[in-house]
Length: 185
Image (cartoon, rainbow, N blue to C red):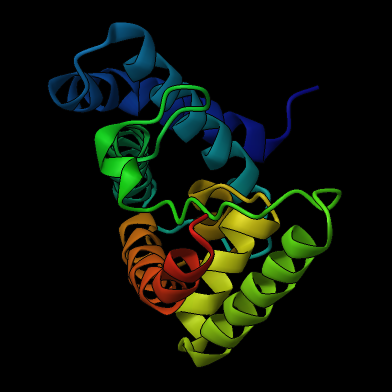
């Protein structure tokens, strides 16, 4: 037996499907991607329809959600082109890497001393950074989080996180340069 709300959902989907599909396809070239967005929008509609607060203007709601999903797809593509892929560092990524070369822990007394000096200088450099830059650097370099994961967790755009990491790396390079020169690492 079909409930009244299920009938209303079905009627709305049938009424809006063609317009919504055309709206999405005009903005997303890949037909499979456009179809995925359409299905996501309808899925969200069904989920939202069963919430206590009713959807008043279903058509406007559907097009707003579709627009947001399209924006998400474009952001994802742009972020993928910005974020380096594992195993293939890009030239732009070189600016975001500190290339911290620590002497091997088992390299003898001199290596152990150089290692401890470098680690203390790194910690001092990290302590000097603004909290937002330090947090991004630590999360990416030490905790192994991707920029996407950090963005999802914090709500901060990926490009902002990239800029923060860049400033942190530049600062830390300056702080560690004299030590690298001194020990010729």
